[in-house]
Image 1 (cartoon, rainbow, N blue to C red):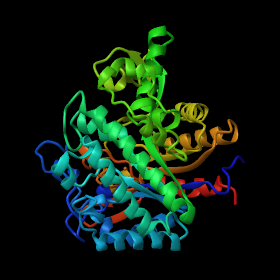
Image 2 (image 1 turned 180 degrees about the vertical axis):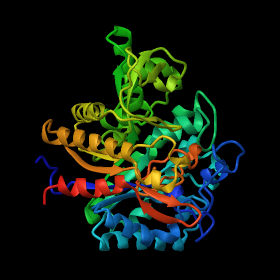
Image 3 (image 1 turned 90 degrees about the vertical axis):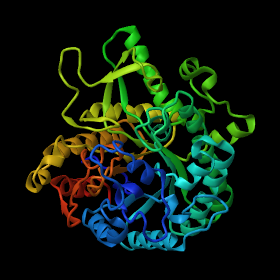
Amino acid sequence: MAQFPQDFAWGFATASYQIEGSASTGGRGPSIWDTFCQLPGKIRDGSSGEVATDSYRLWKEDVALLKSYNVNAYRFSISWSRLIPLGGRDDPVNPEGIAFYRSLIKELLTNGITPYVTLYHWDLPQGLHDRYGGWLNKEEIVKDYVNYAKLCFDSFGDLVKNWITHNEPWVISCLGYQKGIFAPGHKSNTEPWIVAHNAILAHAYAVKLYREQFKPIQGGQIGITLDCHWQMPYDDSPENIEAAKRGIDFKLGKIPSHDPIYKGYYPERVKQIIGDRLPVFTEEEIAVVKGSSDFFGLNTYTSQLVREGGTDETNGYTTVGHTRPDGTQLGTIGAKNICVVSIAHPPGFRSLLNYLWKTYQKPIYVTENGFAVKNEHQMSLAEALRDQDRIEYFEGYANAMLQAVTEDDVPVHGYFGWTAVQCLNHLMNTHRRADGYEARFGVTYVDYATQKRYPKESALFLSKWFPEHIKT
């Protein structure tokens, strides 16, 4: 039987605002998501992260849940606002926040679960947004982000050896500053490019700090993670073949910022469309940016058929869908999520892994992957626990990844399902931002009235599949 290497990491991923709750507890300050959720009509079901799945209080129970699922790794994010409530480099540090995350990390290690820590999963301290515009102010945000990263390396680096700087810069920049559907809710045709550029710089200078001051002592690795779906031409026409290539360039080359990080420049297809709105790196900056990731972190959920034409420049003026010219679907259709429609298409996943390895020549961690079952939020508990569509999705994608590793020699080093518990939407169903609690990805059902956790059949499937397919 084909198997992953013995050191293959597998587990689940979560985000602080989507699961922790206790938004005003333990010295935590407000983030831009706390503010955004209070605006009428911004969250589909009117929910917020004030309680979520209450993991700030129930973290020991959740670690025990992870252990029962036989995981060997867990990816979670730290709330910047919980460590530095006002966010800035001259602002007070919250010792309660540091104590909370150290306790969580120690509990994970005690249970044989390796922590993978994300520094930023979209939840900028509101204090920085109010003070100087947050991600729009290059001079200030880079310094404050690096200071926050240094606090994390100082506070947890003796225990944590796997760091991720940003989660999905495309979401930070485009959904937050161009489409206005994520915090802070701006709509602009210039701001997303500024924000994405500044996020790259904050990432790069945090990596520089880690490599120079911490890695020689602590060891470990550091990188960035992005979202990308495999882009396939709708048909064999030259214009749609070119559109699929442009779609990949816009996903990987600019918004998630990987071409500057791995190649040192933006793709020509991107520069031709964005023009002088695309900020320019100085020679000093590009020297720091290029090569500033030890691995390729990938969040992916589906494949897309791409056609020439569209109104959204952040997609390179392409149109994406999942219906083939003959009317058939790429795969089983899941719930419609504000970020992506879940479509089960394992061959596209394998193709994407091959493309990333060939293009960037970095080991890959699949930092998020999962499936939202259609209408799960309307199901009874018994119906939700029998999540056969999610099992079929995970089985198909896990086998496609195994084929990429064992047959194609793609160095995939880890896999994290989104998510362990059903939070405000994915481990749990997390608070999937503007979707609230409606689109559910988690392998654990959470009764929000009691906060009781119920493993779904998909959790039981994964808890057996991965141990069987990792060498001992």
